[in-house]
Length: 420
Image 1 (cartoon, rainbow, N blue to C red):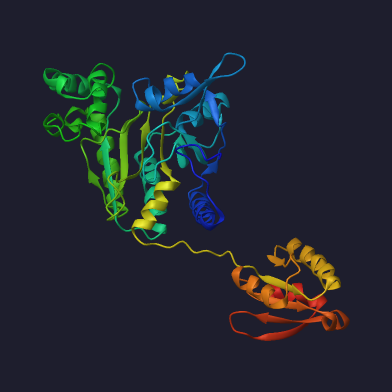
Image 2: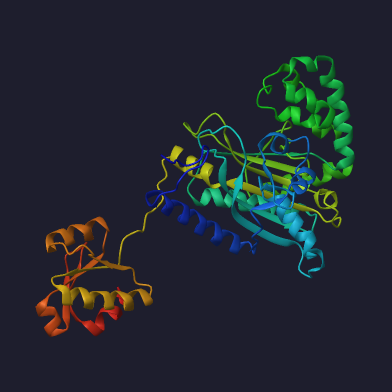
């Protein structure tokens, strides 16, 4: 028997309503912040992610779905959204837009070949925002405040925002030198990935899931101590503005994020909810001041974050938060004979043209079975079409919650339902 590929899932109707609710909430929030939607291809040139995400990252080295097309071009299913947005920004010359920053968002499937875990899939849906074109602590705070607004809007309370500064390229360079000096004497005690990272991106050793409890990780130099004056001033401004907005946060000096393009502000949101799982990260993001130049674009800066819908659902489950399910019908039409079925089909067409949700029985069942079907479909109102109703061209419209019945003509049904 054919089955869904490992690490993927079918989202059935009894679950899809949750996704629709979340996605609509996200659309409402980004509209309030004046962010516009961008849709990029599901696959891109592999080079985009090698250069944009970083050749030393696990995403590029281990997790990408890469293939050759018939033209022998190397293509990759997108593993994350920022690189694709940056490519589109460059290709479409958005830096010339008079409105800066360019504020974008996306909701799209991403693909990573990784071990399936609770709330983590090889195909997952990511929501992300990017604000490109302005370097200002206020934009950083705006993005973080949107992030917090999203999670709190669903009623989540067990949240812990962690922030750090990775500094500019000058600060990062000095910090990397200090990390190499710190880890090199005992690097053989670390995993193979970390032994490789010390030569490519030593900051990623601090982000290693295997060696995070190693004593050298706990005693590693702090990034903050290697920030130059400009980077420190930027970070202090971000923290000050967050405090002005009463957004609680914790400075985590080991927070470096996993991608090569981050500079200055980096942040992650964690869930402290019992039962959420061993991996507590809900989402993360940060500023990227060199990404566009790495992709042969202009020297524009940006900041953004990305979250997984799957992990948001997991957090809601852990805190016992139910998503409302408004799947009920406005009207269910019960029919008593073939002529009534024909009239019902015509009425359904008119109702649906007015965006009134309605349905009828298609199995020619007895009235009692039809009423049971109306209950299963959570119909708010029902009518019964029989010989008497057809002759009088009127029906009894029944409110299924209150039991109240009102007599309405065929011509009044649509208006009555719209009023209700």
